[in-house]
Image (cartoon, rainbow over the protein chains, first blue to last red):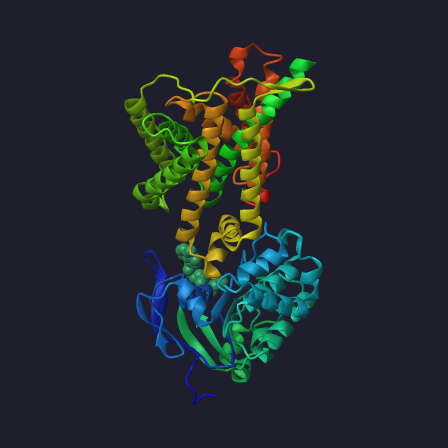
Amino acid sequence: MESSRPLLSLDALTTGYQRMQVLSGLHLTVNPSEIVSIIGPNGAGKSTVLKAIYGFLAPWEGVVRFRGEDISHLPVVARVKKGMILVHQNDNIFSGLTLHENLEMGGYLIARGSLLKERIDSVYEQFPFLYKKRRQAARVLSGGERQLLAIGMALVSEPELILLDEPSMGLAPRMMARIFEWVGRIHEMGKSILMVEQNARQALAISHRGYVLDLGKNRFEGRATDLLEDPKVLSLYLGGENSHENL
Amino acid sequence: MTIFFQSLLDGLIAGSIYALFAAGLTLVYGTLHFINFAHGELIMAGAFLAYLFMMPPLLLSPLLSGIFAVTGVVLLALLMDKTVFSRLRNANPLLLLIASLGLSLLLQNLAQVLWGAKIRAFPFPLQRGKVFGPVVITSVQITILWVAALTIFLLYLFLKFSRIGKAVRGVADNPVLAKTFGVESEKIIRIVWVVAAILAAVGGILVAADTNLEPHMGIVNLVRAFAAVLIGGAGNVWGALIGGFIIGLSENLGVLLLPIGYKDAIAFFIIILILLFRPEGLFGTRWGVR
Ligand SMILES: Nc1ncnc2c1ncn2[C@@H]1O[C@H](COP(=O)(O)OP(=O)(O)O)[C@@H](O)[C@H]1O
Ligand SMILES: [Mg+2]
């Protein structure tokens, strides 16, 4: 896997908001069929990495490559068409639209109605509760259900790479476990996943590799199992039992 | 009792037109987040363009005049967006509001230069009303009712069932998320202007057919539309439609209790009441553009 061309790679990426620099010379790769986690403290710039990959932020320096192609200056819509989708940390559903309409928005770029319907039906098969509530406005969903809807919306577009921003945030432990289980299943469907998590242990437990980000810089990287055992990572970023749970 | 039913009918007719004005105004508010004062002048332009096509030397049929007028107003709205509003896309809403106020005054004055301040009417033959039980209705009024109903129905089909219509609602609901799925907001904004302009122009032609037209007709109708938008909850299309009917009915039933001179004040009165007691509207903004 290491030898094949990476699906996504960030090369010395520097960017930020207006005048405020957030990321400094960041390196990161995601290989085909990999789950990669980015962990790090609040405000480290994890969400900013995903926004830069997705085109919400333009790079100040450095390059974003997807399947080897420089996509640094493509607009969001062009990146979606290339096969990636971002699941936001917050506000990741259309609360006033019905569940069905939410899924249709997930497949907005699928022009053929029959194909869209097919994709939505397959999401309904995986998440039967979405089908049961398909005519209700999405605002009625609980936090965990919202997260699953957001993942379902991402699946409709059949992306190759899913960027997940803190999918377990604010969820009860049981729901959290369900979300991580789903991440695993989506991986089994053959998708690559780049996931940002506060819940570092659980994220690393299902990941192949991980990056530790602090103050917008790469601090540690490696196989997830190695990071989970690295004493420095343990004490600095995974310290204290359940230290992440209430963030 | 007869006068009550007659006022009810008149209120429904007026309300169906105000509903069109309000739906367009709230649609623009829901996606661009400012109250477009020049919406009144889209209404006025619809009426005047239709008048222009119906009168000598062109003397086109009302239907053809209407179609050309609506097309002209759509182009006017797109021009307004291109020259003014698109340059202020991420500006403070107050700035947008003031820019739209400026456009509104400019267009009113332009209309006054072209047509003068005289009150005009469409060149329809004098109407003899048909009697239906307790009420009298003219054939023009019957046409107004079904054109308004058809327009509202088409708006519903567009927003509820078309791919672009759903994207309009998506952008109004959560613009960042819409962009995430590949919706290009500039394209959606242009669609919103087209739809708002069609609603304003159709309504403007209908209101001129029901009453008359003059260069400042936009303002009084904008106030009614604004009241209806507030009743429905800003950005809420279905709420605005209902709000339009509420304004039409209160104006026409209100004059049974108040001196006729107060008719135009009723919308203002409702605006004040809503802002004081229910600024989120009767149905709440939570419906959004749905
Ligand atoms: N839209 C924004 N505008 C300005 N600064 C922002 C914005 N979003 C995030 N930031 C800042 O960028 C830094 C990194 O934020 P973020 O990437 O959200 O961190 P994380 O996801 O790791 O918690 C923080 O200092 C945050 O305040
Ligand atoms: Mg974050």
